[in-house]
Image 1: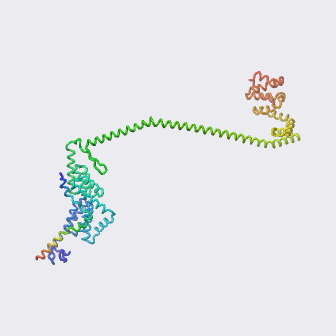
Image 2 (image 1 turned 120 degrees about the vertical axis):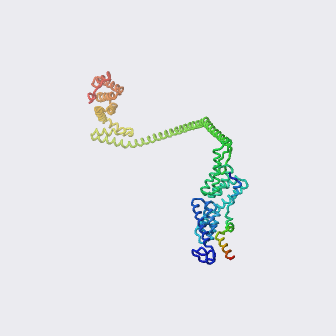
Image 3 (image 1 turned 30 degrees about the horizontal axis):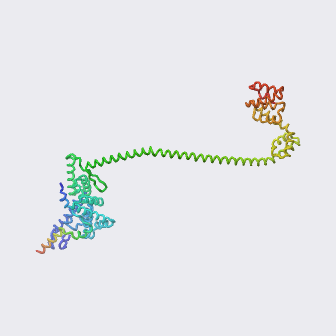
Length: 47
Length: 464
C-alpha cells in the first residue's frame, strides 16, 4: 500500500525558466577525470 | 594522445613518462563514460527514458566533456516534459564544447518555436502549484491543476504520476490506471510509474474479486472539468427524476396536441371558412362588375355596328345607283337578263325618291324575267334535290306571284317543304294550290298529298 504523504515528499518542484541560470551556476561539474587530475597533482606535490 | 596532467605526447603508453600520470586509468574512465552513453542511447531508443537518464548522468559524471551524452540527456528531459532541465544540459554542453552542432540545433529549435518556452514554463508553474496544493491538503485543486498541466504538456511524466497518486489516494483506481498507462507510453520503464501501476492493479483486483458491491457505492462521472461523485442511491433517484421529467414532457406534448386539436383547429377552420366566404363575395362583386363592363362593351359594339352599317348604307348608295344605271343601260340595249342581274343588286331603301321611282319602273319591266330566273333556278335546285336553295328561289317567285305558271311555283314550294319535313308549310302551300287551281295537274297532285300526306312523289316526275 502506498503511503501518500511519504510518496508526496518525493515530488520536488520542477525547475522554472527563471531558475535556469541559477541552476546552471549551481551545477557541480566535477567529474572523475577531475578527481584523478587532483589526486595525481597531490601525489606529484608530496613526492 | 596527450597527458591529461602535463600535456606531453604519451602515445599508447599506460603512464606518462614526463609526469608519471596514470594514463590507463584516465582512458578507462573515458571509455566507461562512453559505455554509459551507449547504454543510455539503447534505453532511449526503447523509450526507457528514466533508465537512459540514469545512464547518461553516469556518463557525464565520469567524463563531463562527453557532450554527446549531455545532449542526449537533454533530449530525454525534453521528452519527459522537463524543458528547463533539457535547456540547461544543452547550454552546458555548448559551454563545454564550443563546436557543438547538435546543441546549437536544439537550442535554435526552442528559440524559433514561438510561445513554446512560456507555455511549458506555465505548465511547470502549475505543476509546482499542484505540489503545494497537495501538501496543503487541497487535493481537488491539485487535481484540476494537474489536468490542465497534462492537457498543455502531455509528456510531463511527473504530472501524470502525481495525478495518479491523487487518484489512488481517492480510490479512483480506474482513473489512476488510465493516467499511468499514458505515462508508461512516454517513459516505459519508470520505476515510480510501474510501482503505481502495481498498486492500482492490486486494488482493482481486490475490488473486482472481493466483497459484493454495496448499494450505497459511489458513482463517479465527469461533468466538464469537474468529476461528480454521488452515492448510488442518489444517482438512482436522479435517474428516476429524469424518467419522471421525461414522462412529464411526453404528457405535456399530448396535452398540447389535444388543445391544438380541440381549440386551435376549429378556430383555424372557421377562419378559413370566413376567408372563403369573403373570397366568394369578392369574386361575385368582380363578376357583377365584369358583367356590367361586358354590357357596356356590348352596347358600344352595337353602337359601332350601327355606325358601321350606316357607313355601309352610305357606301351602298353609290353602288346601288351604279347598279340601277347599269340595269337601265342593259335594259335599253335589250339585254334583259343582264339588266335583271344588276337590278337585283340595287338596295331600294337607300335610293332617293327619284331613284326609287326609277327602280320601281325598271323592276316592273324586268320582273317577268327576274321571276322566270328565280323559277328556273328553283327548278334546277329541285332537280338536284337541293331543296333548301329551291325553297328560297320558289319563295321569291311566290312572293311576287302566287299564280305563277298556273300554281306550279306554289306547288313546288310546298313539295320542297314536304321533302324537308316541314309538313305544316307544305300543307299550307298545297291547300292554296287546290284553292287556286283545283283541276290542273298541280291541284290534283296537291289533293293527293293533302289526302295522304305520306304519299311519296318522285321530284323528277313533277319538276319541269
